[in-house]
Structures are given as C-alpha cells and as structure tokens.
Image 1 (cartoon, rainbow, N blue to C red):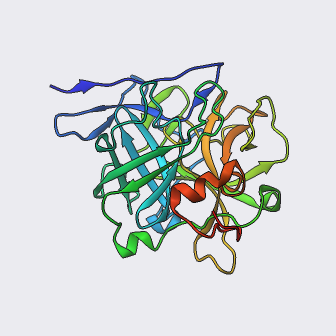
Image 2: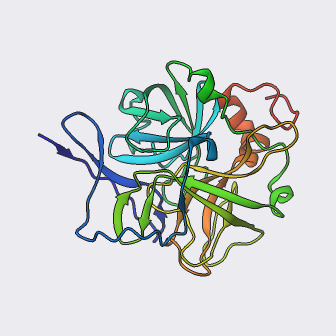
Amino acid sequence: MSSWLLLMLMLKNACPKYVLIRLDDDDKMVPEKSQKTENNRILGGVDANDIRDAPWQVSIRSSSTLCGGSIIDATHIVSAGHCFYTPGGPPDPQAVRVFAGQVLLYSGTAHKVKSVKLHPQYDPVTYANDISVLELELPLDNGTAAGAVCLPEQPLEQYMSQKAMVSGFGIRKVDVLEASPKLQILTGVQIQASCNNINVSAGAFCAGGEKDKDACQGDSGGPLVVNGTADCNTATLVGVISWGNSCGAEGVSGAYTDVGYFLREAGGWLCMALGLDPCPNGESS
C-alpha cells in the first residue's frame, strides 16, 4: 500500500522551500497532486535543455521532502539545513537519496548517503544557519563529478554586481503543490544589498523580488550561482535557497544562505564539514 507522508513547516509566516511528496509501492517519488492542472510557469523558470545547463544540481529525497543541492566534489553535496532537521536529531542517512546528472526528476541513479551534517546552530524558527553537507557512500562517476560547482573565494559584496541563476525541481505554480518533472532554470536574479519585506539572520542574504520570478517549494537547498572565474570551469555557488514569505510576490525578497559566510565565519564550519584545508579563501580550517 502506498504510504502518504507529509511534512510542512510554517513558522512565523516563513515558508521553507521544499515540497511534500508521497512514496509509491516501488519507493519512487510521486508529487502530491492537485485538482488544478494548469501548467504555466508563473515563477518564471524555463526547462533545462540538458544537465549541462546546471551540472552541479542534484535532487534529494529525505523521508517526505524533496529538496535540491549542489555538487561540491565527488562525495559532497551542499544543501539547506531545514531539509534535514527533525526535533529528535539528524535524520538517518539511510533514508536519504541523492539523484545527480539528470534533468528529469524521476531518472538517474539513486546515490546512498553516508552522513548528513546539519549546522549545529541551525534554528528552525528563524532559519539561521540554514546549511547542511551530505557525504555520499560512493563517489559520483567522473562525468557527473566534473560538473561540481566552485565555492566562493570572495565575500558576498563582490558578487552583487552580477546577475545570478537559480535552479530546481520545485513547484511551477504557487497554488499547485506539484514538483516539476524537469529541472527549471531561472536567470537574471538580482542579489540585494538589503532585503525587501523580510528579515534575515547573519549568514543569509536576499535576492529576487520580481513578480512571478522566484524559487518556491521543492527548490530548498538548491543553488544560487554566478559566473565562474578564470579558475572555475562551471559556476560559483554564492547562495543556497532557504525560505520566503511567499513565492513570486512583487517586491518581496527570497532568503538565501550565504555560502561564503560559512567558509569565512562561524568557525569555518563549511570548510570543516567538507574536509577542506585550506579553505577557498586561503585560510586554514
């Protein structure tokens, strides 16, 4: 019998950007259906033509949630903390699967997870320190791992002049909780020096705010990237999709975890979780 699993966290009117799913008899992901069937992409995304459009993107299934993540190297994925938070402690890694190297949600190899490292100061009320690292049991194949995203070597301010890109398998219509069957790409996202109509904690920043152009439920943990540098063949991971008060509302920012902050600040937690020494900013962890 299919089991219906539900987990929706709605605190302080904040909405974490994951989507509920159910598991069918073959343990495959099936998004919850709505009676509404409109398929227009009101959040402004377009279908990825090929995984090369965002080769660092992965989809992650954890119990009843669908989240995104970014390939850092052959064995490490960076995602959001709220995707894996439970009051009783970290989730069983055996309940988590990572799908990489594909643009279709239900295709690709399910990679088993060895460990889930949730930031120890993650706050489920404020979404402070909303970051996590997954370590895979086995390395990704060389072709998939080659699409790994680069970590930022500069503070956030240095990237504000660039337009960013976000991606994910999240919902394409605000009132239809149905995951996209194909990876969606949204370009031209503006990183903001100050937030509009939301407040974020240290280690987070705001972006977006254009009408009908936003990340939404199911995109949590996914990447916000800018163009790579001369030393980077792919892109630079500036942010992790975190939360918002709404999706695609004009003048309302979305909240993103500042990846560089957790490399440089907070005790260099991200460097330690990834086993990096030295850190990309040139400091020893």
